[in-house]
Amino acid sequence: GLSLMNPAGIYAESAAEDSANMPSIGLMGDEMGGIQNTNGSELSEAKLEKIIKDVKTRLPIKDQNAEFNYTVDRSYGQNYYNLNWETQTLSQQVRYGEDGIIYSYYSYQKMDRDTGQTTKQLPQYSQVEAAKIAQEFLGKCLLAEESKNFSLADNELNNGNHNLRYTYSKNKIPVENVTANITMDDKTGEVVSFSTSYDGMVKYDADSGLISTTKAE
Image (cartoon, rainbow, N blue to C red; front, top):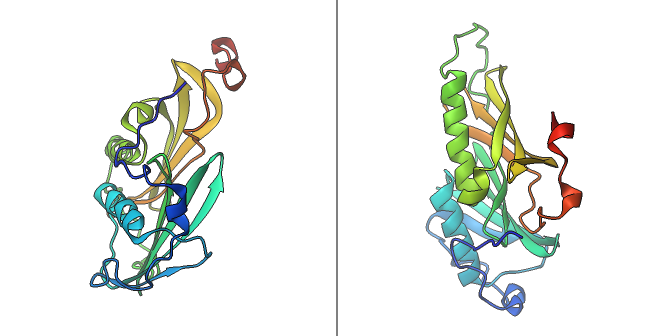
């Protein structure tokens, strides 16, 4: 099976800490407009701070003057932390697993920067350049040894975005229904969305999850 070590060592704390009351103000208060938890399942301030610090070292979170809120849910045997930063112009959302894996990331510009612009422009980034940026991003979200198991299956430029889709193999054998998707803005080179159906808690060494090489071909 997979032995997943959490890179930030966040999860040694007891589960009781998740239900501890967190002050409504205090964590990084100078940088953020405020902190709100929208589902009643609260984290200790220290644990939440560690999670946010880990996310910010891996992703381009813009939290200046942002209002921050989070929710916690549990599925597949672990907690997932849904973090959200909102400013007047940008909305960023991260789904972070208890195993230290980032399962999704979305960055929405609230104002269209291209209003009235209709002239078609040549791509700023080649497919090769886009693939390189996307692969680096994939490595930041997933544990290093697992990101190498994802292979680029599709790479298309459509409506100003590079859309890249990855499939997953374990020990060079394809695993069904495990994919990753990345969308990159061609104008800025920024990843605007990432999601994966990968579940680090699943043991893919069980035969049921694998398809034969013959079937894969």
